Length: 109
Image (cartoon, rainbow, N blue to C red; front, side, top):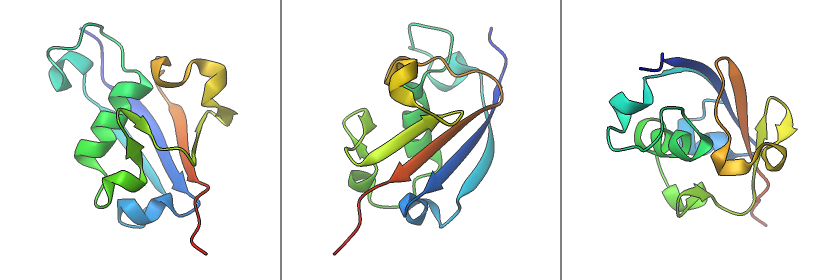
């Protein structure tokens, strides 16, 4: 069974307001099969990470962070300082010690 993953998760551009105003968190994700026993694969992807964030970190206003099983439009996602589009977005297999950054580009006016 896969080992737990250590991960640094950052929120910026106002997204941190949905997470108790905490901009940076060091987390240890459990083995995926422990968290999602019915999951068909062994490795964490961004898709499962978003579900974990929703269940464990998000404190308010889900609709401002997620749309369906992804982030809502206007939330930039960087994996180790590069756009997640370069890594396959939701299907990126998270590696130990990755840094995942969520930046809101949505601002009131």
